[in-house]
Length: 129
Image (tube, rainbow, N blue to C red; front, side):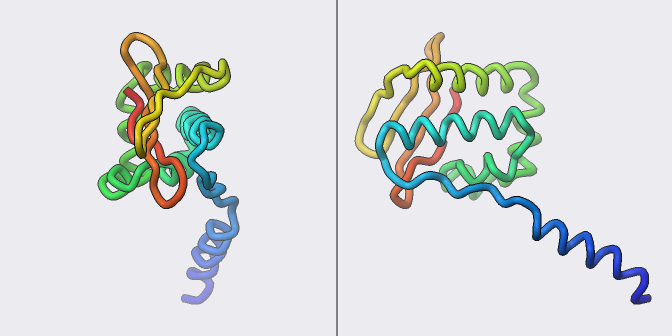
């Protein structure tokens, strides 16, 4: 019996010892908002859904989780990938953020925007429209 459990225990230890996503940056300046948007989009494209989930706003983390995020992103087909790529290009181009109290929008073209909200002293992704 113990021999059968050893591989499971080893797998659990290795899973816990693996790299953990860096926490979202603190601060509510434009640079922190851009970093969160870029990290979120790159994580989606790379299939790092646990990392992307950690950058979401509380309302989305409460209803989704990494598995649901992966399902939604993959289910969106090419449009999900294109939205993430559009955010990355816009962040890298240095496009200005449109600020309002507690929120910022990054226009990404065609009437669409990436939206971040302030939570716990930092930005969290609330939408990729």
